[in-house]
Length: 213
Length: 213
Image (cartoon, rainbow over all chains, first blue to last red; front, side):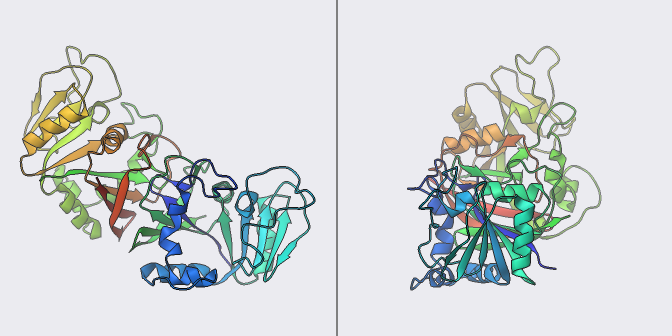
């Protein structure tokens, strides 16, 4: 059976985005530094159409993560700025331009209905009836492949709290953010995790866990 | 020059003790599980006079940590239960009985004066004039050796915030505590850390950082 997977970059003090996220600063103050380890990689740069980049032990981690993913689920806050309410007549089309790097079905959790948005090889489907419905639709779209929970923190925390995640990989950046979006907020301590591996890489430590359900 | 070192076990959600610490439950609810990885080790059990135990990749990490430490600094909350105020006529003598496992000079931060306490090979000196004075005394006592900041979280956070720590090793246990004493609270995001290593071990990941001052 396909797995539900989470992988996300976190600061050493447990934040996956810095304080004061907004349209100008989608990852919050200092949040860009969470991803320095990956944006320097050839594998990442190729995916977003950029040249150059390095190859190191993180390259295999990223390749493994991107392999066998059939669908992604994200919150409205990852899809666009933290506005609320109806989408309006000229709705936000995502942060990523006309050729988003997903190239698979993406399910966006929202309280407000909206027709699907097709941009190049990516289809965004807007789901208004909750995380379990989104997961059911994502599983259906993914077929034999895995479903990736893409964030933000609140969406990941909801799926963890509901016991719906199978694998969790944290990319721990050697930085402090001092505030922002906290992973694990509201997730009960009885969630059982089994350490699968820890990998040292330039500017990051990759910690992978199986959630024991 | 000798280093100032921190090493401490932390949950994946960033707590070094669980909620509701007290005399009956010094590590807070669920906090004992933070140390499962170390209390199962032969190296740890020998140090506290117990037999048996396993040897694995963590054994070398623990041996390295315990080597070359000449003095320890701890808060009153690590030395004893979280009572405040003067020590009284029959003062608390530590959690560890008549033969504490430190066997070196220990400096206890407190707001209330008290004569030094000598128990077997360990001398507890009570310091009332702040973290910098405690560090000066500990350095003096340690000579060429390193000074270990033993916790709790608030003491470690004070030393980190003051830029007085050289090395920081986190033993990340694959558990959530959901609340309690948080590492890095009050430490500003401009603290610069350099990842030295990440080691996978049974039931724990060891992440070591240099603080760039």
